[in-house]
Length: 312
Ligand code: TUI
Image 1 (cartoon, rainbow, N blue to C red):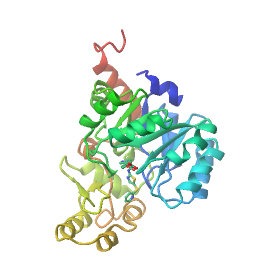
Image 2: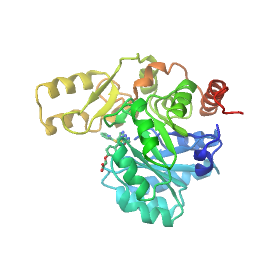
Image 3: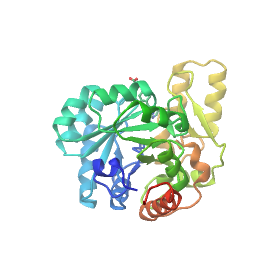
C-alpha cells in the first residue's frame, strides 16, 4: 500500500480519517496517526481558539503527522485558516466549498492542501490553484454530500487531474479500498468506521446506532434547501422529509436540525438528533481500536491486491 499519497502525507498507509464535525477531535485524530494513517481534527463550526487547543493536545499524543479539516461554511473559517498555518499543521483538508482564497497562505506555510471535491469541475479548479491532492467524495458519504456516487466520481476525477486522488464515501473495509484503487484512487478517506473505534469519544448511543444500522438505514435531508446531508434515519429525518415533501421553507426545516449533531454526538439523543453516517454503516459491525482497524484494512487490501501487480 505505497502510493504517492503516503509520501505526500508522511504516513505509513494512504488512509485518512474523515474530519467529521463534533466527532473528529484530538483523541481520535492522534490515535489514527499513531496507527499509521492520517488523523484529522474536524474544525466544523468551532471557533479558532478551540481548534488551536485541539492541535496542541494532539501534538502531546503523537509526533506523527496529522491534519485539520476546515468546513468552509463555518463563520470562523478565515480565523481557523490562519491558526492552522501558525500552529504548523502539516495537512489541511477542506469541505463544503472552495479554499482558493487560503491557498497562497497555506502553501507559504509549507502545508499540504487537500480539498474535498464532489465534482470534476471543482477538482480541476483545485489542481490549477495549487492543491497537492484531492479527496473525491461520493454521495454514499455521511454528512454534507454532492450528487455523484464514489463509483462514478473517482474515475472521472482521476482522469481529469494529475495530482493524487483519495476516494471517500462508502468505504469501510479492504474490499472498498481495493475497489477505490481500481477506480484510480491512490488513497482512501473513511469516516463511519472510525466513529465506532475505542478512541472515538462520541456518545455510546451514537456508536450503537451505527453498529445496528442496516444497509438501507440512511436518509438524505435538505435536498430542497441545497444542503443535502446524509444521516441515519430517526424521528428527525422522518419529520424533516415529511415537511420537505409538503414544501416547507428553509427556516422551518432549519429548526429541526439546529444543534442536531451536537445533540446526537454529545447528549446521545439519536432519536431527534442528527446521526450523520455514511451508507456503509450497515457493514460496520464490530468495535475495535484504531490500530486494529487500520491493521485489518491493510491486511485485507493487500490480500486482494495480490495479483494486481501491487507486490510484483
Ligand atoms: O463537508 C463535507 N461533509 C460535511 S460538512 C458538515 S458540517 C454540517 N453540519 C450541519 C449541516 C451541514 C453541514 C457535515 N458533513 N464533505 C465534503 C464535501 N464537500 N462534500 C461535498 C462538498 C462540496 C460541495 C460543493 C464541496 C464543494 C462544493 O462546491 C464548492 C464550489 O464553490 O463549487
